[in-house]
Length: 134
Image (cartoon, rainbow, N blue to C red):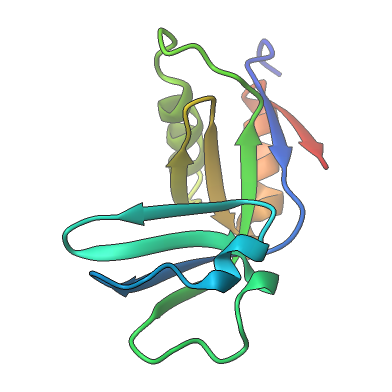
């Protein structure tokens, strides 16, 4: 095992990634999630939140990717730090694990498919990351 790098915390619950049409309003159900990220661009409105917050019948025209787990990089992280997300994503990519990344002012979040969580945790620990559950 390599020298300890960072602590990654597995957040509770399963997460979904939702794509709404540009100009869409943010649905009220998003705010029921203990973690959510909303990104609006000129092309789309993307939302990441716990699946349990989303209604059973997602409106037509909404892209949906369910079955993700979220790893939080223990922060806050200083803006002067470099390569945090690159190191995590490189390790996972080299081991065939796809990610969806979200960054905030204080830290980074890496979503991996639920079916890949065990493998992701294993390879990250081999690289010196400490994995904790909430």
